[in-house]
Length: 97
Image (cartoon, rainbow, N blue to C red):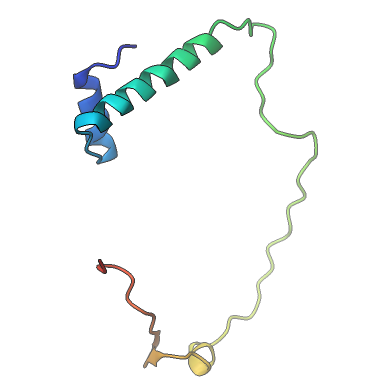
């Protein structure tokens, strides 16, 4: 696969990133190196290798789903440092610069 300007523009659009100037050339170079590495891996003989499905031979024991009593809303809000009638109040984290 060739990494040309059209391919790089499409990747930038999909990832919502902008590549300009030296950064554009650097990312293009890195992408070529990654694809060369994958091509090198494709040279390996893997016909007799079974696909890896699980990392270990251990079996997982699932716990049973148990219904537990929920905490009532008023009790959950009782010790809240900041609340507004039915809700927890938290510091604003979005929109700050």
